[in-house]
Image (cartoon, rainbow, N blue to C red; front, top):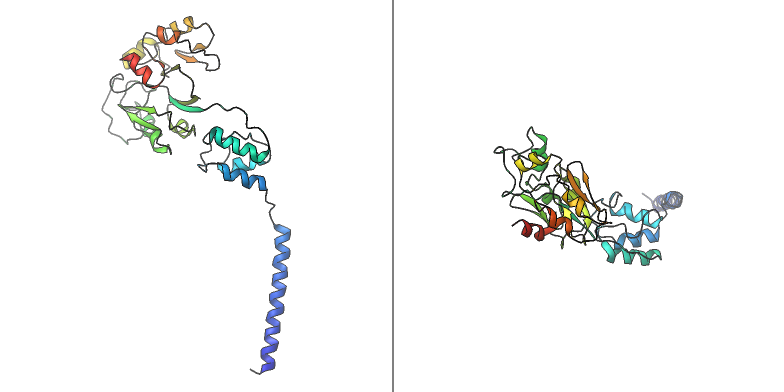
Length: 273
């Protein structure tokens, strides 16, 4: 090829390249996605667990909602007050008071308290056990299965099966809510960390049926409701429930409970000992 041919080819290639570059720049300007700097800053402060307990599809979804003013700056339960304060600074608003919440298992029917009706040899998973006829080995089909489905989903090593029943370490719990969602018997709820009195049973059965199945079950005697001066405890069917917003932590309900299933953590187990 002559020098002239090479020159012409180079010019053509150069012109085509410039034309393509022009098209790319034009398309980039036309279809570019506007970036919200506040959203980026908020996302940088979120922990990145993508647990979804805030009600949004992961941390990206929550960051977008906060930046748009659709979610509160303290909406992340995992980050808690420290993260809320940082996000509040980004958004230029006060984070406000936030109540630390932790998971609580409404069952203390361990191997020493709950009676077995059979020898379960199926898949070692709470959801699998709950799905079969009979619902696992324990006579109480509404109690903790003890296979640790909640343990498997916890990213913070905050829940373990101890003597056949799940127990939450409140110092590690971040209230992400994954254990709440995975429990087939809906035994786990998020409660204020400062709560001292909670009913550790969810059995809907009547007193005799509860006693026949487990010595650590609410028998529906209503003695606790009669002791409360603050209208904080009521019966939901055959099991007592405490309204934490009304509870004044007087402890009269726990003192009067004949089966000692009202309390928190080690304290309730000490009372039953």
